[in-house]
Length: 303
Image 1 (cartoon, rainbow, N blue to C red):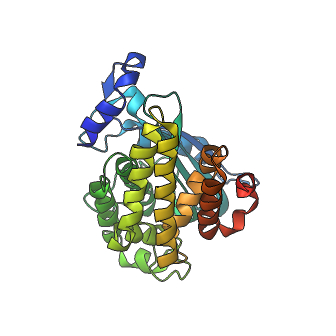
Image 2 (spheres, rainbow, N blue to C red; image 1 turned 90 degrees about the vertical axis):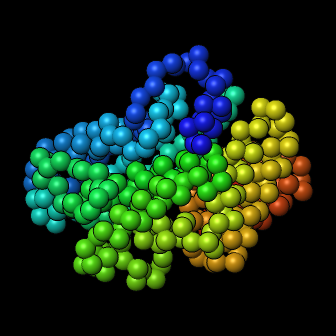
Image 3 (cartoon, helix red, strand yellow; image 1 turned 180 degrees about the vertical axis):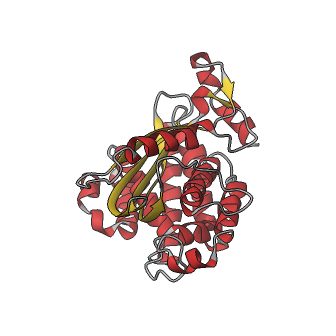
């Protein structure tokens, strides 16, 4: 179903590219270690190359993708601490987008900052897709995000379309050793902030967040992809979707998904509603500030 939807949505872009491939991602990769005197200076370029090949050269689904259909985005890994010559702490920023139908623009699908990254890498090891069992923590983290990115992208094309990929990410979590599930800040269920990988996948698979996932579909497929036909109607649908996200945030306060939505869509939402009528501006600003209260300045143009 996803492949059929992609073909129909992007048929207007076929003139731009006619080749298809098995790879789903076309991600820019950046690895850095600012201010860190690395024991092995070859780690950073080797890791950057490995990450590029891991995401962009592997096959993750059974669908065929035209070049212009590939999931765009970037992965930025920042090493902040060297625990020893092969073990590091850092931060991973994951961002993706997809084209908007019948336009030359794209829309952001997800932005997530993983601040709980602890991994081992010696510059020589292979990073492997984790599907049938546990290989190592770093492979599991990267595979987790590959499947999560796929799930978010597929959700934007069909209602709950990302289920197979979110299920795969959760299966990957279940394959982790108990010591990681309990002791790694990126995986633990005991993190009271509820802002890590476990809660990311637990929340998105929970029936409590179904309305939000349906809002993601409505926002993109019935809103962004319809702007070429009737901008005002599409904007009204997007406001409905934002309102649904706000309701979820009100019902289940201080959870990770509404905040990720705000981090992903903040700039785009302001751009969409900057020329809206006063009533729409008031509504969208009120909802977004309830989700994203620390970003008052960002929504000032909607006053």
